[in-house]
Length: 128
Image (cartoon, rainbow, N blue to C red; front, side):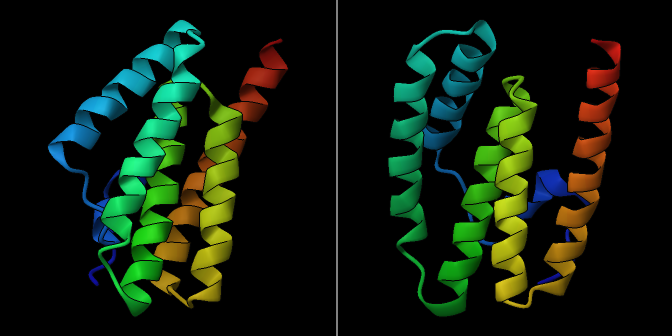
């Protein structure tokens, strides 16, 4: 796997490729999350269940990579919906899995994204 340049590219680089239905549902989750709608929980659950079907098509290390890609994608959904703490939590979970699978290039991308997210959160906390 070629090293992804950034966190946005990571899910697909790991083998987690959204179907058109998932992309549409992702947009709905982000919109509901941003709006503070209670519907976001149901939409996020539906997204996750459909995404697991994509991941389950893989075997071995490709399965593990796609799982990590899904965790990162879920984090990106939270970030885009304004839930920075959930984003950071998912990135940390993905980093743990990445280290367990010894995916060094992926770990570098995740570490950089985590550092950026932590700095953003600290900046927001300082403003409050």
